[in-house]
Length: 156
Image (cartoon, rainbow, N blue to C red; front, side, top):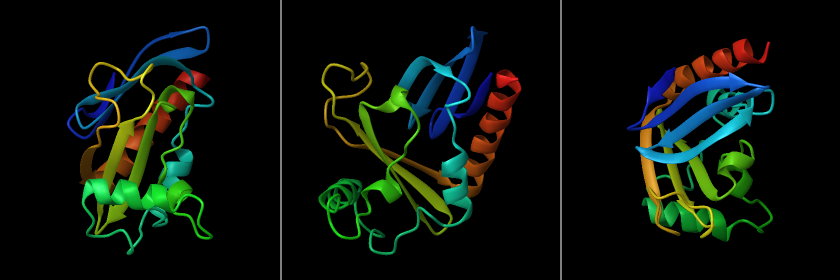
């Protein structure tokens, strides 16, 4: 089953065995992960909550290029009011080799990411090269709600 669109964000679900579900996760037509996941811990619930409540909005980051956005978020990592964890996509260990940042502006959600782990970048990514994609926030919410629903069905 395919949820979403590879051009922006998609999840391809297959082969549920022994509590694990194979999920191919794509951002901007680039494969992020293709590993079996333990469905009870693979969750976008927190991301959905942040999207619904404006948690990824930040007027201080609006108007920046993708590279400027990533640099600014990472530069503020240890500041008194860091933006790093507010905008970092936190999912599970299947995406640990990537820094993926989320920013919502005017009803559009932007993803910016790069692979920093030279031993675990897949062939579709160059080490430390920054990639990005965007889609309407309402579409992202719909995709993540559908994914969440399917994960709950499988986990039963």
